[in-house]
Length: 99
Image (cartoon, rainbow, N blue to C red; front, side, top):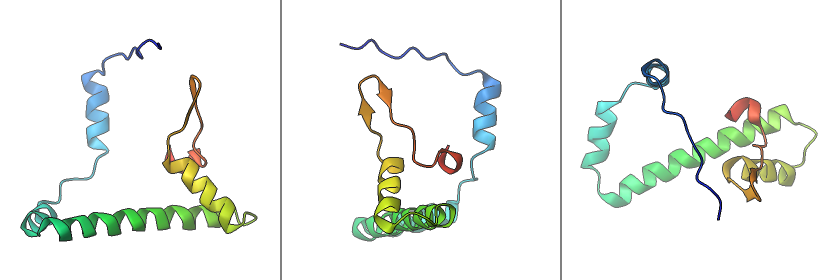
């Protein structure tokens, strides 16, 4: 059995830097979603995730014009799916944009 990963606690400065990089909360959007029935909320989230995948696919196609659509799709799959092989994780397909 593998031993648990030992992580050092973050300092208050590191936490502040992370929080400062986040977008502010859109309270109007949250209230709008809260008023929707669960089925429609799910549809909104599904459409947003579809838009994110589309943006990633377009970015990969722009940066790797020599690749075919199936190769682009494999890069997307590799970027969006964490795969564990032994003790090492595979690197993202496009680390410069996702990391």
